[in-house]
Every structure is written in structure tokens, then in C-alpha cells.
Image 1 (tube, rainbow, N blue to C red):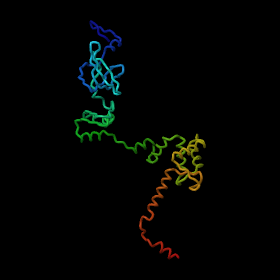
Image 2: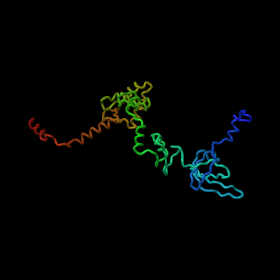
Image 3: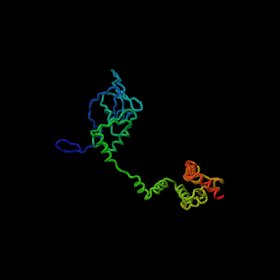
Image 4: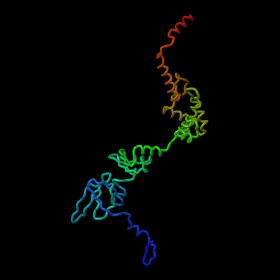
Length: 287
């Protein structure tokens, strides 16, 4: 609405107002070469609002050309803008937390006591690797405040609530199974079932059980899944000298068997017998 004489009001279209209305307060900036600035509005056809700029020099004017400020963008491109009209620029040394990341130099943050929190710390970490923060709190108060605001998370409780399993082992297995394709999940369940308390499993029983877990799985698909697990190293094929032809052993069972054999080999003859002559004496008595 627009006000007119004698207290009457008249509606005005927003376009004429918007074209002249600006939320900027004019001020004078003292800049020198190397000064860090930030664009607060449309400045040049090749610049955008919020862009960081550095002063690299001043191009002196003459009777024909006007004086121009030379600015450099982050990618090295240079802009030349006239100083005869107000420029939408401000000092570029202060920004919001986490607004940009700096791999060189230090990020200086001034925080009030209320701003000391885990959220603020995480935002500062996104700003750079070298951070210096000023706060009215001492080290003990900072530690106590962060410990108080830091939420406690129980991983075990979260896993159980996510999977609906009370047993942690079953909960972890369910999470792993949820990341697999239906064919792979069915084959893993089949291998676990047919292996049971044994070490090896047969191809026929694994395919048969996998098809019972997934009705859409064909014999060819089950065999292809077995081949994929073998190529990935999850299962190991056994030849005739190691077991029945077509049998497999899972990598976990194979590693368990190797561990047992290694422990046996390491323990053999490593301890002095309690009765070193008992064996020979027993053989003599039995003779």
C-alpha cells in the first residue's frame, strides 16, 4: 500500500517498489592489495552473490577511462569494476559456521557460552583443519557442557530395536542379510542350514534348500550364485582328494580349521610331559 495526501491510501504494484528498494546500508571500505572481500549482491556479469573476492590492484583512470578496482575470484579469474558507483561488497573475513572449507590457514571462531555444543564443534570441523575458538568458558566448563549435551547412544539397543532380535548375533546377521539380494540371501541361508554342525556341504543340498527359501530362484540361478560366491572367495570348492566331488567349505569354516591345526602344531612338544617315561614303561608292561 502507498500513502497519499490527506491520509488516504492507494494500492501500488510491487514492481516499481522492488526495483528501487534495497536492504543495504552505504558505508566506505578501506581496502588495500590482498584484502579479502565478499560480494553481497550483483557485482559483475561473471560474479555472483556471496562469492569471495581478493583485491589485487587498482587500475588508475584518466580523462577517457574511469578508475577501476581489480578483484580476483577463487578460481584465479579477475574482475574489473568501476568505483564511480556504489559496489555491493563487504569485508570477507567473517562467515557463518561451516559455510565454506579452508585447507590453509586458521579458522578463528568467537563463541558465546551458549554456543559451545557438539553441533557447533561439528560445524567448525567442516570449516577447516586448523581451528582457534575463543569462548568465555574455561576448559573444565567446556568439557562439562559438551559431556552434558552429548546424547548417549547404545549400539546394542539400537541394533536390537532395528532388527527386532534380542540376541546380538542374530541381530547382526539380520542386518547383513538385509543388504543382500534375494538370491544371495537364500543361498547364505541354505549354506548355513545344510552345513549345520559339519564343515563341508554339497552342491545339490545347497541348491535344493536355496530354492526352498526363494521360490523364484531357478536351479540355474542357484548354481550361478554358488559360482559367484566361489569367485568372490566366500566358499571354497573341494576336489576328490579333499572330500566328495562337488562339495564346498565356507571360508569361515576353512579359516577355523586352519586355526585349530596351527594351534595343534604350535602346541606339540612345546610343554615337557608330566611323566616322560610313562609311555615306554606302559609298553614294557604290556609286552
